[in-house]
Image (cartoon, rainbow, N blue to C red; front, top):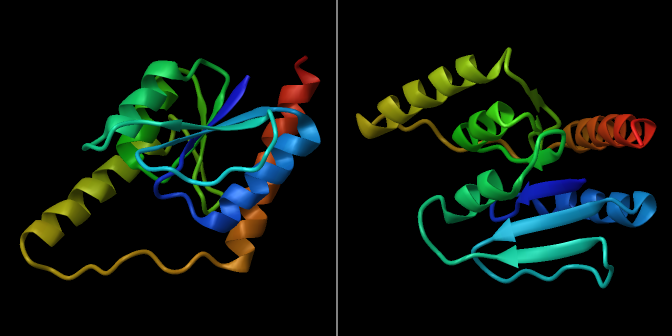
Length: 151
């Protein structure tokens, strides 16, 4: 069982939460990124560095993840693909993305893309708040508890 992390856009505080969880629970965490990043010296965390290019890391996650595993991403199209494979998806803000909510999230994403391409300034996401970090940690713990209960 692996936790897959879309690591290029994953905030550092979320990676730290994942690193602590991997050491505590001995669950494998694999960061997938197109550039080198430092990881803790533990056999439970590794970096899968892929070549640069549009969606290369996303494609690698989709290819390697398996049903029942956890994927950490805020990339809505990636979330949609891995949900179709039976994975659980958690955003860096602690939001569970599911079959029930992913299509509406895709529609919102496409609408915002349309606005941006027509010149509307939409701004970026707000900074990660303490409550969002806590929600992420809580959701991660729920998944880890369900995973360990299933073994």
